[in-house]
Length: 196
Image (cartoon, rainbow, N blue to C red):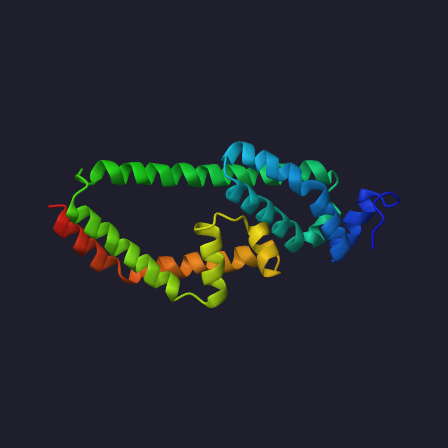
C-alpha cells in the first residue's frame, strides 16, 4: 500500500510505470475529480465527462511504461485531458451539423398518424435490438438510458468497475447500430413511403 504522505509523486509514477495498481489508484484518486469538473464545464454532460475521465485514465494505464519520460506529470495529464475534451467537442459539433443537415433535407411533416407509425416502427426495432443484447449489456443499457445512471452508479449497483460498465455499454451500442444497419434499407423504404 502506498503512503502518499511519505512517497513522492515521482516515486508513485515510477511504480505506476512498473504496473503497480495501488500507484494507479492513487493517481486516479488525486486527479480524476479535477478532470471530471473541467470536462463537465466544457461538455455539459455528466456522462460525457465521466467518459473523458475513463478514457484519459485508460490511456494513462495502457501507456504507463512511457511515464518514465514524462517530467511534469500534472501538466502532461491535463494537456492530454484537454485534447480529449476538444476531440469530444469536435465530435459533438459534427454530430449536430449532420443532424441539422438531415433536418434541412428531410421534408417537414406534421405529427400525423403516419409519423406516429414511423416512430412506433423505430421504437419496436430499438426494443428488438435491446432484447437481443446479452443480459449484462441489456441491464447496463437500461440503467444508463432509462434510469439515467452514471457508469459509476451502475458499477456500484452491479458490483463491477465503471470501466467494465463502459465496455459493456460500448458493445451494446455497437450491437444496436449493427442491428439498425441490418434493417436500414427496410427503414428507409418504410419512411420514404410516408414522406412523399
